[in-house]
Image 1 (cartoon, rainbow, N blue to C red):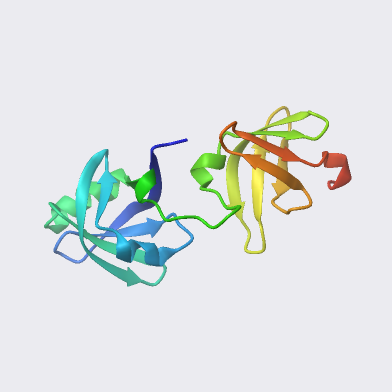
Image 2 (image 1 turned 120 degrees about the vertical axis):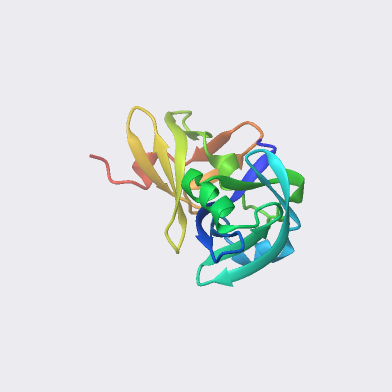
Length: 167
């Protein structure tokens, strides 16, 4: 498991005082209000202020005090991270996407489909994009995804013939 988790990506400047606009990479955008510090390019930075503009977050980060300084970040589009121990606590049977990516997907017959390359949010349920010899999309439903073992990086699903139309 990763020691740091991405929670947002700087995408633009906001105003002339060095604020940065952040695309949140979390289900709970309001979690930014509780942030005291983030890691930016591996360096710990204090969060001085948080505002919300539509579906984005505007942060004032310590040490970034002008639009020119914020502009430099805008073009690099760096990620903001937190230590795993400072991350929000997840409800039972939910996982950080960072922990799911790269997990091997096998079925109950021990057939290996490949590894999760992306988690797609659809609104009703997530979908795992699994890349192997073939690419498949696995709907994350209790009747299809039978077990998630993050420690062993293994996801067990029903055999695809039981839930997916065969070509």
